[in-house]
Length: 241
Ligand code: MN
Image (cartoon, rainbow, N blue to C red):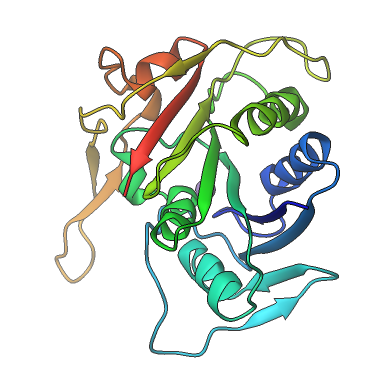
């Protein structure tokens, strides 16, 4: 029986984690599923870990823990403290893409990277969001179930993991959309469109800046994850640690 650990960086109560659990149960009906996910939102925390203060694993029902730490902490606690011995770690489904320069920033990706360091296979799933299209997790849940079914037997070199990015397609909500084509990609090298707007100075004379970079305006490098996902296809990258 396969043992699967689910985690994310949007927190244990996130709708995307529920979608990942639904997809995993559909793809692997006999699997034993464990959840160890952050108690609070940990997006953009990267591969931060906690070593100087105690880590709290709060029970949230059978085989389910809210970890008061980062996504990488969740995997560490699951493997080395709760002794869950998973065959796979699945992370996501993140609300937002994790491509190119996002990879070191992402907690979603950090969780499967941490798993890969310990020799455990992993898949990260992220849903690129176009803000003009309503978000409907039911659209992508069957796609993720398909990806899990197909990838669970694919060869994955030790020290690597899969990073999937799902496109955000227009369409009626609450209706299935055919699964987009899967494209093998490399992470984009171009930087995110990093920009700031200057705000009025603080009272102590400090300068204040608000990040205004628009994710959907990042460059779509040829052959990259960004190009595939932004053009409506599913990006699959095999990432080496
Ligand atoms: Mn997130």
